[in-house]
Length: 281
Image 1 (cartoon, rainbow, N blue to C red):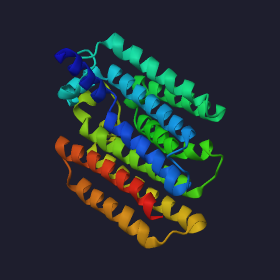
Image 2: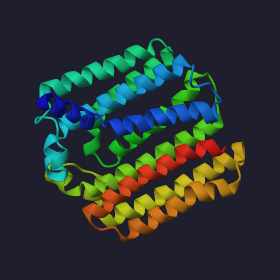
Image 3: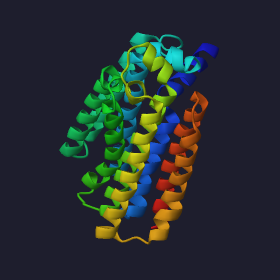
Image 4: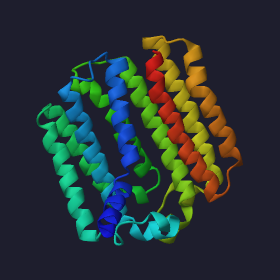
């Protein structure tokens, strides 16, 4: 009984269940507050969220499958594959989760099937190759996160600009968080030959790059709002720019693994605040 409990707990950690819940939460909030859908009786939304969560879970599994050695350096207590979950079970689980996510999409739309196949393929290439390259892996994860919001427009055959704004928000915040995570994981990545931005450029130049991304992020969101949506500026100041200013101040001072870990977690808080802000529109 104890070993079964340990195995289940390991699966929960392996698939990042809390992150999956945030993903589902974001899609339901988008449908409810931005697209004005009755989320409690919408079976298509349920299937979309389920397929997205399955594919994301499969992505986490294959990422940990390929990253065992690196994680043993960066986060040895987090390693599951090869310990409580055998490697052959992990690769089988990845296949089952990914195939299930694609199969469910068949009930929704062939466009969503294409998006899901693209997502599964990109997650595999990310785990196997792209994450070891400077910036390309960060960009891949950010693109997938933004797509998880933008796909709601595909599901409902709409072109809602608010959904696009939040997809852009998810894209940039994920991109920033991924680069910060690379600074956190510098030691393990460098040990096993990864060429992430902090390894290629160093911490100082990578920080400057993050500041530049934050500036572009703010400009893009304000431009889309000014030209098309026209939400009050105070909304962006309180819900976006104040937290981002705090992030910048803390990033300036950060120089240890613990500092970057905290900033990575704070990026999740900003993303959660962004999701909750949908209720204010």
